[in-house]
Structures are given as structure tokens and as C-alpha cells.
Image (cartoon, rainbow, N blue to C red; front, side):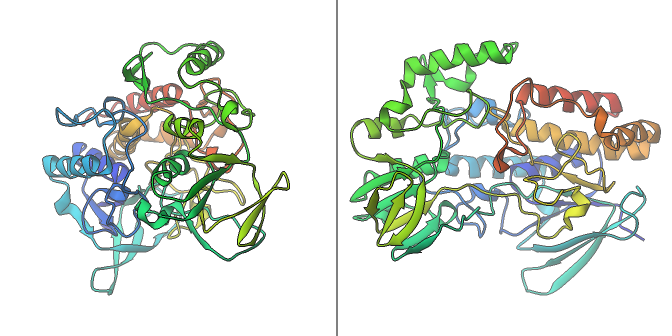
Length: 443
């Protein structure tokens, strides 16, 4: 006989949103978290945290915070990891979420007790507690909310390098780069942040890129860039043309600094929200290099045939989705695909009783977008008890992929693994809210 409670895996922003919404709908839950407290990756001292000392939000405070719990007055436009950790802990305090979590607990497996397509099937969660003793608990369902930025994507570069190599996931403070010749491989937001860190400490700094990027400044006309145009969204093609011209006014042409011309239009891949790297490139503090051809002892050979010597390689090569405690088939995860194929990026058509909160990426979606994911999960679980017909209608939609809404908003996203769960924030939030409203179940 399964427990009536639901398991929530993770105590970062997505896990807290899941816990809070189960609480709102009066559904019992138990949380599991590897770290000693809430905060997820924003706790720089947590075992699986991938933030670094200079990390700040790349979206602004007002577009990112939970609507029901605004950040305190005086919080900077772009808060640091310290501000954010305090914020998540205040959120947990306000709603009494901590007492339902088992901290210091690592999940080892999550399995259905019977047919995963049967809504009455319970789930068993196996974990290792603080004392190292395995524990096993049965639940009515499982909400997976362990985030998307904990498992580094480490490429196998050909050749051999004599110096130090590490992923940005291991990077914490710039003193490890002091006096060294540094190559950052990859130009995502973390890679660009680390270049900016490194120019103040390293002997030299290069950044290797394989494609061009669109750069977005944090401030436009003296305001956080993502607070502009918050009304009715423009059609994609018009917005791309207008915003591209506006960005050129503020950041110039990145190809002037050595970046390749982007192979995509603005918003078709996640932009780089960092104009400081362009500042340093313009001042000669760092140099853009081509993609890596091979490692070569004390140096690196690039695609254009040039070779440079380095002491440290920092792999800014992103992250991959990581649910090691789950059989991928339970998530309808095709072999070789970058992400599971879930209804609204939340509900697995292969397992009623298994839900994912936080597996979504979109420019400007914020934590409120994840909160709305969690609200849908809680509303559906409540409907299974209070209005089974409404729940059955939604489950029928989950099983009919042809009826799934278009979440692109008309944009043509790059077919990269890291873009596999990317959506347009406006199209996505409309679809999630509409499905929640259709269930018709109030907290």
C-alpha cells in the first residue's frame, strides 16, 4: 500500500515551487535534498553547486522572482548568489517548507510499484541518508525538480594537454587562474563571465568559439534590458528585426572583436547576457580564437591551423540533463535525444505519477514560469482526487502528441542538444496557464 504523500526531489527554486504548490492544494509531500539546506545550485558551498564567486542572475530581479514572494526592497537589479540564497531561504521560512524536507539525502532510484500508466500505482523512492544508511519510502507520485545545471557536459577533445583542464562546474574563484595563460573553451554565459574574471588575474586570456553569438547588455536606456517591452509580445520576425537593430546600437558588431557571424537570428538560441566581455576584447585584455582542432602537449591547435601555448583550459561547454535515478523510458526519453519528450515539458506520457518541474529554458521565463509548472502538477494531482473527469481529459491530451501545443512562439530554434527543452516564454506560459485553468481545480 503506497503512502498518500508525494515525493519532491530537490530544494532549489524548482523544488521549492513544487513543494509550495503541493502545499497550496492541500496535498501531502516529502522533500529530498542532497545538500544541508534549501537553495540548490545557488548555495555555493553545496556539494553539487555549479555557481562561482562572481555569479549573478542574467535576468533581472523583477522578471525572475516568485510573484507571491518579491525580493526585498534594496535587492540589486541583478542579484548575486548570496542574495539569491538568502531569498530562497526566506521563501522556505515564510511557507514552512523546511520541516518537510529530508536534507543530506541522495536519491539512488525511483521506480513504479506496478504499471506506470496506472494512476493508482505507487512509487518507491530509494535514497541514502546522512548516516549512509539506505532508506526506502513509498509515495503516491514523484515530482522531479533537481535542476538542469548540475551535470557538466565534458567533450572528449583529441590529443593530450600537459596543463590543467577543468569544467566551469568546478570553477569557484579567479585566484586559480592567477599568473596563468588561460584558454576558455566555449562562449556561453558562464564562459564569458570567467573570461571577465580572468582578465584581472591571468597572464593572458583567450576564448575559443565554434559559432557566433548575439550579445545582450544588461542595461538599455538605463533600465534592465529584460524589463523593456513587457506588454503584448511583438510578432517574432518584427521583434527580431527591431531588437537586433537596438542591440547593434548598444553592443556594436561582435564580429569586430573576432567572433564569427552568428548562424542564427536573435532569440533562436540563448543570447549571451554579458557586454563586459566585448569591453575587454576591445581593450585587448582577451582574444577570440577559433574552435579547437586538437590538444598538443603544452598548447592547443585551432581549426585555422594556428597554435598557442596555455597553462589552463576551462571547459565552458554547458550541462546535460541528469536524472540518474530514473529509467529513461519512464520519461519517454528517446535514445540520443537531448531531452525527454514531456507534455508541456512536465508530464511524461509513459508514467502517470511522474512529473518534472524545472526542465524548461526560455529567455525571461524566470522562476515564476517554473512556479506555474508546479501549479499545474498540483492542480492535476488535486483533480485526480476531486474531479477525476477533468484529470482524465488532461491525461488523454498527454497521450495524444498531435494535440500538444506549439511552444516555439514562431521562433526557429537551433537544433542543438542544449536547446532541446527551449521554449518561447510567452507561448509556454500561456499554454501552461490554459491547461491549469481547464482543470478547474482551485487551491
